[in-house]
Amino acid sequence: MSPIRVRFAPSPTGELHIGGARTALFNWLFARKNNGAFVLRIDDTDTERSHEYYWKGILEAMRWLGLDWDEGPEKGGEYSPYFQSQRYELYINEVNRLLEAGKAYRCYCTVEELAREREKYRQKGQPFIYPGTCREKSGKNDHISPGEDMENTVIRFLSPDEGETVVDDLIRGEVSFANIHLDDFIILKSNGSPTYNFATVVDDWHMKISHVIRAEEHLSNTPRQQLICSALKYSMSDYAHVPMILAPDKSKLSKRHGATSVQEFKEKGYLPEAVINYLALLGWSPPGEEEILPLEEIKNHFSLDRVVKTAAIYDIKKITWINSHYFKEGDPDRLTELSLPFLQEKGFVSEDITTEQKQKVNAVINVMNDRVKTFEELADAVDYFFCDDFYYEETAIKKIFGKEGVYSILKTLINNLKALDNFTRENLEKTFQDSHKELDVSAGQLNKPVRLAVTGKTMGPDLIETILILGKEKTIQRLEQALEKIQSSSYS
Figure 1 (tube, rainbow, N blue to C red):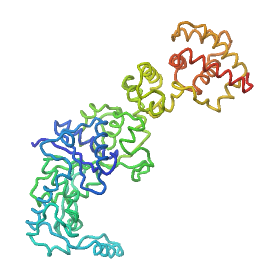
Figure 2 (cartoon, rainbow, N blue to C red):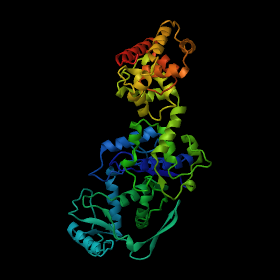
Figure 3 (cartoon, one colour):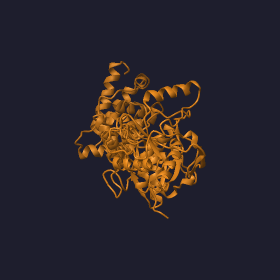
Figure 4 (cartoon, rainbow, N blue to C red):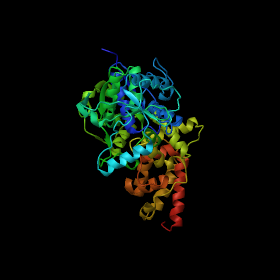
């Protein structure tokens, strides 16, 4: 049995979409489960849209997800280069092999001529199939040279007119395509660059890719690629086409359905392990009913026979739920480090963070990790821990500060806190107990105005822990500010 070799071959024309990330994950899992090689190749033959910024972003997203590659950019390998734009000479050589064998030909049809033909078919309500107009105009010695001016011509593959091509897909079984519908498709464009269907076949063969695991939308490309394999006398890879990812309404997934790129999830403060966990569930069914699965466990369970055929439905609520689990169960020290960019962007902590600031962030993480779902939510919810210019919830001011006796409640607590020497949880709890007994009020009647005074909110994490993080001086200062607000509003 030949070694397992799979590849992820993104086009650097945008950020890494979750569909592409899911494809990368399935390839990575298959390689790791079978002790194979995971190859990263950049398919950048779309010269107008490909950009260095995007392929570097794809590599960064892959690293963030923890999907390391064995061969590819920044690592090299036996079958380098791993950028298609650097492999043009190989493609030209293989095009010439097809020309010599009479299995490809130069097409002289102009763009205008083809447009007129397409319009005729459109008016008839029929799909346009290139009729092979130039099949007899190109000779076997019509070679292409690297960098040659194609003079507005293209190279077409000579497809069979009869019979069918059968794709034996590892997920979908046998899928048949009538050859008459494949037409003589282009393999080399007029600018000298290869088309996707041609370049990917050549590279997969020369890089010894054993399994091509990719999205369902490529299934219609596979018969053309198999025909090219046969014409070049390549042995074929095994193909597996994973299901599409659709929006909740089963439409095509777009930005209006929430974050759709790995970079967006990172910027919104999701954890990479949560994104990986969710992506694995998009089209793959683990044994059992457990849905919270670390990457190592997913790898141990992964197999192509558990990949479903039906479309996967994208659900932003589910990935957020999964993220909340990892957030709650995560190591506080790691969460602290990961939260810093979000808190620094808000100006809550300095770029050159001090040890004291980091300890405070760690304490905040410990009281908030079961109340927020992402780092973005965390940064939006913890302003009162780091700055004094937070806002009171408007609807709560009159409702809570306007109640009879609140001024006296806060005044008594301030006095009791000032008398407190050792600011510990045990002493704070006793101070609160003594205060509501002294005032003859319930714990709720005491805690509600105190929470609003020190945080500006009516709900939040444990009040004693919140006050311990704020410290004695800051807590008293905010209680006194609340007294001033009550007096100025004539609530006292």
